[in-house]
Length: 318
Image (cartoon, rainbow, N blue to C red; front, side, top):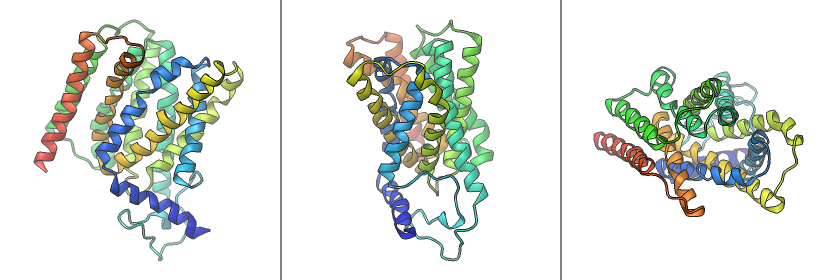
């Protein structure tokens, strides 16, 4: 039984080594971006949708990874990420407090990110909520060097400024309005998202995907009361959309982000994830045939150009 658990756990390390982290993060961002039109199709309260998709995502991840949720990490579970071997000298009876703390902090931060973003979207404009949430690289730049030992470079600072400038231009026509408290909650969601990336990165040699499973279970429990406020509408279409949200929009991306954050820095992972808002108007254009504004296109080009330029400069430096 123990050997089977170890085999399924460390088979994920093989997948990490085979899949390019940058490619995994791009897949994650593109899949995250499908949430907009799927959520609009479901006639259910926002928190019920958030909890429902997280419940499905947790189940999907456990089936895909072939293991139960992890609530603590034993010392012997810290395997060599390259070959998946387990140190025989370590006992399974002792808990690795530092690794367990990172597991829970990463899970709590991501759960807060999902819930606070939904609340912020209800209290302020959607554009404000997205823009303020994606201020998260600032917190990674401030706290990352101390918490994960990843030093910032000049290209990092320039990239954050360029991406934020692109985001402002991207949402230029929709920024403004909304409540002050809603904007504050959106900023807090950005702080939570930044620290989520930091604590996931601290698990780069372990299993950050366990934090995602745990975060989805936490979100499900918090949202349970909202399931009974209003029945799931739209019949089969609503069921199909909530399943798609859980599996395609949040479940599979959680696995992809786990692979990406294990191979790339917290800041790189978060900057690449900013492809998500850029993709939203593209989905709208393809499905609803609504052409994005010139400023949105320009902002998207700046965001993508900045991310690509930073990657090119840092790879050339290496």
